[in-house]
Image (tube, rainbow, N blue to C red; front, side, top):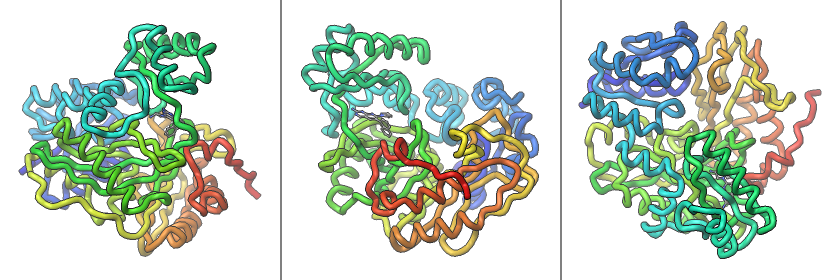
Length: 448
Ligand code: MV4
């Protein structure tokens, strides 16, 4: 069994991982930048090692410091959390080279899924539905135009090295294709040092629905149902729920089996998420695979009664999966509470939190590293808490979330709490009638 795990992350996810390790009797090592010296992960871990100054490149992304911290503390594994090094294949390889267990997929799998055109081809070979378009990356503008004509306009031009909406263009017709193709290629080259592009048909007003799975790397992959993630703003999720309002048992079974088939194609080990676009007709298409634990994993934990961090630790340690996944029961919603001003275009609002009280009560969970007196550093992402509720059905979950949001006391910084309060009262949201474009037309009312 794993004896000591180093957590190469900060904030709520570092705390979340420490908690499960504690429950499993695994010792923990926190690493921290000087900006996080007084943080809860540093207090709650068995040991803590400072790895550098605030900028991520010199601390949470600095591989030599993290490996050194693991070696001096005698850790035998590293959990990367989400963001930072969690989907960095080189880091996973360096861990292997130092006989440290990387808690995640094999380095090769991370690299394969990180290249979005390779990931798509891999899924296609496994029989997973993919959006019609080019076979992998296209070499030239001419090849791109040919693929676009064949798929039919409008099309998406996507960067192989991209993902999460970066380096993406939509072309309405052949007339504008070349300039958008060149622009996307230049942007991808500058952002990722890799200008390769692939083409696919544009899916109109899709929903973003993702399947949570866990594989043991020994031939077994199980799924834990879906999460509805269509409530996004500029590719940042703000609210997630499980199940999806559009899901039925048949669609869940087909999407779940597709996700499992894709993961088995790479003999997947670890927790992973297969993201799908779902169109108006209920047809679904592979979009991307995330090879990490995700921010929104708690809604799946709540409706399936599963500790997904525990599963990550178990399969990383070589345990085989002997029982199936779980079918969701009841309803769970997560609101991301960010230190941002929703009335000022969600601009960051770092600073000291002078008063903090989190909502409580039956079916209420608040994953946060914040306490009264905590200073939100300007250096990292602005998420300060995840408020998660669980109830028997969606109307009750919405009512519980509104009650819980009302209990939040956060003074000193602006937060996304008022945004969520208005969203949860929107008739279209309440009806479950929304897609990934919903927030573009959602009008926040001034606070009265
Ligand atoms: C698409 C699409 C429509 N058609 N692909 C955005 C993030 C990246 N993972 C893929 N994305 C999209 N790909 C085709 N062929 C629309 C989006 C998209 C989107 C997807 C999920 C959630 C929010 C989104 C917001 C805008 C565009």
